[in-house]
Length: 200
Image (cartoon, rainbow, N blue to C red; front, side, top):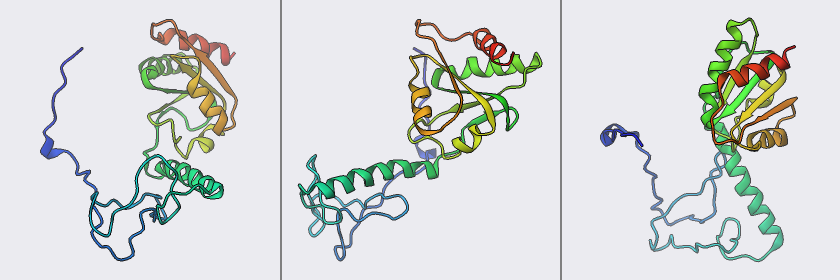
């Protein structure tokens, strides 16, 4: 463990959510067309009360619905709402040339080893680039365009390939997974050795 400095709460950005107060025209499942988010109402407010819970609701009205077509529609709507988050996500951290033979893609704890391997490889004349993801679902919208500019995508992971599987299911590319599940972190030299093997 290590100490963590409590930030000055007064300097943090405001993340409060405005609550709807107008009763006229209120529908619990009416959504913002861009974000697909619904308005919030203070629970129990007269005229703004609606059902909550795990049973499927009818689109717009929020009434309990057992209609299979409505259920399908609502599942797709919730998925689209999650994917819309990508519209507000920052671009992933990127280093190196914008195109080339090899791009190393990582997430989480692999950042340090990947960055060191990227530095070592480039100093040794091996042209590689790297990208570090902070969001894996939804994925950043620019990935397909970025990956298309590289011949191979190396994905070092401290597991059995969860990121590789997500990427492969969403973005076609030539992936080379690199797994390590020993309870010990990657050493940059291990990734450099893989880089040299792929660039032979």
